[in-house]
Amino acid sequence: MHVRRTLLLLLGVAFVIGSAACAPEEPGVEEAPDDVDVDEPSPDAPEEEAPPEEVAGGTLVVGIGSDPGHLNPAVTTQGGLHTASEILYNGLVELDDDLNPVPELAESWEIEDDGALYRFHLRDDVVWHDGEPFTSADVQYTFEEALLEYHSRTRASMADIIEAIETPDEHTVEFRFAEPYAPLLLQLDVVEAPIIPRHIYEGTDPEQNDEANLNPVGTGPFRFVSYTPDSEIRLERNPDYFRAGLPHFDELVMRIMPDESTQVIALEAGEVDWLWGVPGPDLERLQADPAFDTLETNRNPGGSNCIMTVSFNLESALFDDVRVRRALAHALDREAFLERVRFGEGAVAQAPISSGIPFAHAEGLDMPEHDVEEAAALLEEAGWVDDGDTRVAQGVDGVEDGTPLAFDFVHFPAFTPYGELLRAQLGAVGADVTLRALEPPVFTETVFTDRDFDTNIVSYCNGNDPEIGVRRMYISGNIAPIPFSNSSAYRNERVDELFDLALRTVDLDERSEQYREIQEILVEELPYFWLVETTATRIFRAECGGFRPYALFAEEAYCDG
Image 1 (cartoon, rainbow, N blue to C red):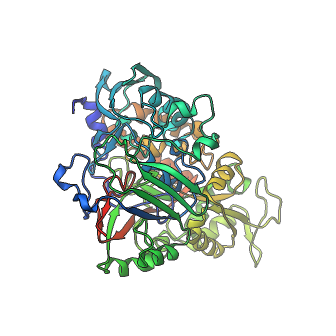
Image 2: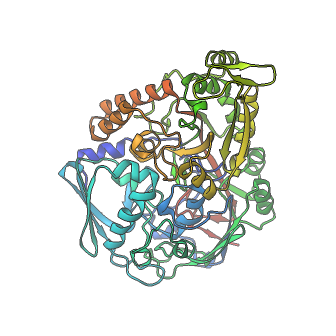
Image 3: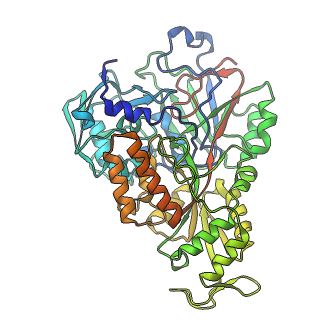
């Protein structure tokens, strides 16, 4: 592969080497570490590592935890949707186990102008599932009309700095930035930038094109057959896939199974072959069972380095006072969330930026620790007085006296355990919390479009660089009806300025200091509260192999019986 790397690119990639924490958008589909110990052929694996011909074919049955709503991952970062759809598509590049970019739809690239110009040379043997040729126009369309409009991480990081996406010919595409931009190659895999077909979507709104989104056409190893909401998604082998001999399975069936216990029963009964996550109470037992193999990973569909994060709606008078937000943070026991909800999978969050991005993660921050007495004192100070049954407002700006401290907590159904524990912990300081479980498509509209919520929880995936998954949560320009953008509607000019400075800074030490200052401000102002960094364990039948932990997880997979 001919890839001319500049110092800037080397720094951009070096930022993430050694990362060790990622997470998915729902407990079973959202997180885990990179210490993979199963047969996981790399994209450049020699031919002899392929399974013997006699084990090719058959049907792979996968359990997934939620109905995706549609199958276009370019217009959302919602993990459940990416879990169900990434296998249909490809990115320009793939990230190997060490997060190095390797060819996928792009077979080579050059980087010029110190990282302000990226030129990609595309494969000439790729066709869409409907037989149309894949060209540079598809890449241009995907970014301009989908990713830069609707994909919250891409929109937040690139929209203000990219000058043009040009197509000199059908198999060349150029990204021109106003200034050097280091993280691009880390943003071009199928998780961050799945390429969709221009000839299908042109002239429509790709987010609202139900006909296309429910009948997806991709370039990936499997192609669409049918989608029965709340039941199953059926895919079949793509006979024209550009990677010869792949995939091995004839069919891939995804069964929508919201209940994790039901998923485990189906696995043990031989009704499914692969689960994206294992409920904590069952994990040790299944790991000890020779009928199954497991794969721990911090890379997930929809994103990586995810932190389960509570959002406060700062447009509500209830949460305008930072003392209230700090009180509620003190009332939450993060260690309990790790042990009782995650069953120890992951780590207590110690900063707004994941420890999986070591150069950007700040240590030693003054995060609010669990302290019920301090929480009660802060609430009293802020005008929320204890009347014996609950707390009521007394002199709170924008809130009528006597109003109880009561608010809702919006969450995915899969996150109900987080809600139940949060309600109990906040109840201990006099807050009355109502849980609202919403399916992902309804959640995103309720939170990010209608802004009809008080608090919520989101698995905010930080990605492998703060530009990829952190900026979008905090910059004021990303308060928009975009899924998984700035949920709290947080505004701080200095934070906006620091993110822009970090974007333009090449020196790693300087960039680290800028992100540290950002995190110090965030911990002081608490527009969000960060609970746990999540990891996950995939599980599959022991006679199967060749899986990857996320994205094109079944591209090289096979079962021998």
